Image 1: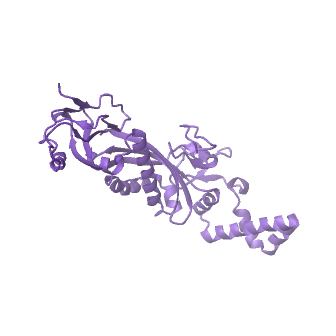
Image 2: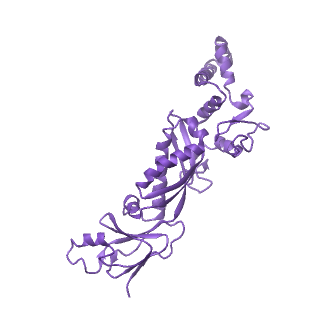
Image 3: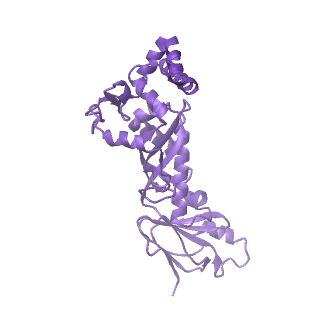
Length: 329
């Protein structure tokens, strides 16, 4: 009775499985089910790949492995040493979250989802599994980390305003660039989407005023004046701060105009998707953007509360553990 090498209980989210016995006999049968591929691995390299079907192991259907074994005396005898690694070739979904820096050196926090599949099992085993990442968790962690690394590198070429106000366009451009990089690991990036982006309050405020037509120089001048007034107030009390403002009334006026929207009487917020001003309703952002129709209030409130995103699932995170997946932050 020939030995059957197979992956019997492949679940939807399983990615990789190593056949537990690395002593393989000629005449054994390798059973590869639908959406699977079997890779023969030896001496640190992925060799022959078998697709769907029942394969009897002979020197003919594993030619690369046979070529290596020919160098060994008695290569045609059984058993010989080789690992059989099964790969799930179906579509996978992953979540991501990270923090990077834009072209204008502004901090940028982002999160979203991406969809991918293993396109070349041999390259995937060589570049990702590499004789070590035999578990699905190890492989998915590597892929997610690599995706975040590539996304950070891609976003570093964008300005903060373009990245935050054009999410769909940013996702499309990033997908094109990242797809080329994924091919190097035997992966095919099917789709990706940034669900949200945020920055530090200081930079978020600059974006808001830019949308209102305030020049960058005016914003910087107002911020400088505000910091100076705060320093004067700390050094000499309210009277000192007041006298400092009186000395430069024009800048003081700009500083008052550059206060937070709720303090300055601003009646709109900037939509992070399309960049258009959305009128406030009862001092709150509207539920949906009147310009692009996307959910706005939840996004604005989430950005106001969330300081970072979970690196495991990409959800907005606050505290020591992620409320969505429980990952330690």
